[in-house]
Length: 372
Ligand code: SF4
Image 1 (tube, helix red, strand yellow):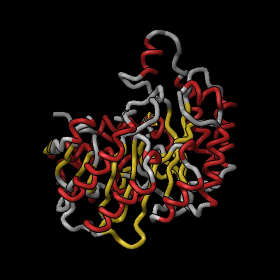
Image 2 (image 1 turned 60 degrees about the horizontal axis):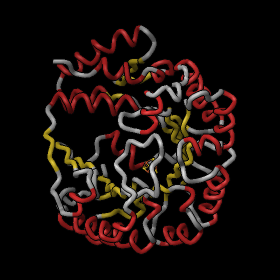
Image 3 (image 1 turned 30 degrees about the horizontal axis):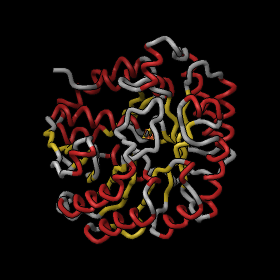
Image 4 (image 1 turned 180 degrees about the horizontal axis):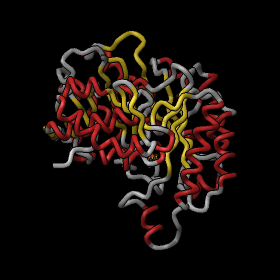
């Protein structure tokens, strides 16, 4: 099992309307921030206990707002300090408007071998509604430029379930995505998170949530269309051509240790989680991460939550090995109504969500969680 390193780059040129992530528009702090990240990589050199690192992931915020030189400083520190394996997956999230040929060639030259682009939709009016900073054409061009720069592992993010969105509009987005040379697609339904501008618009009655039934039909269409096109539905929101699954994110779902550096980043050493403060000022003044000691029940909940998300399903033998028979019995007892209802299948020593279970995955998972 190989460890991962996550680097959080919290800068954005402006805020998207739905954004609930930690990000800041203080772009002038970028260089100072990179210094702090390099310092943190040095300070926490023992966190992964020499474990080989198989994946590196730059997430945000907007990591594509870093210059090639700043990205190189971070990668050099990682390669110098950590035991990074040959052939490691190195992902950078990027926004289409930043992905110029010069940047993409520079990143490729540094060993970045996977791109994850926030495309969201190919409808310009909807992109403007979301306050995204790119057009549909820029997204298409960015994918093509990335291919020309030599990237063979490209993921795009899509969103569905917009206010008043029609099935036709969603089908058109999915079909457009399938014309692009991308090996991985992540698709999420639009969320109205507390504290976002989108949520305020909803609460003020300026927009209305899409009917849940239509949203489910959109998810169903997505699953069908991507399956026909050869993508494997390997996690609730993630689809990949064979062998092109995100190794980094799969690591999270398999509970592998990872070091998260940067403001707001989380880490996991195999037993406990650590949280960096999600404030740029406090992070720059080197406030140490907070430690959260997980109880056995919390670790059981995480095991359920991460296992059921994946196409491989929840491994009951592993559950027993880690937590004992009492937890397995509890899990199966609570799973039974969902097995009877066709939302879960129990095959051999694996519990897996069925197609109808995927539609209500949060409800199924929460029913299996530990309640005192
Ligand atoms: S680019 Fe991403 S992190 Fe930045 S504001 Fe938009 S959704 Fe949030």
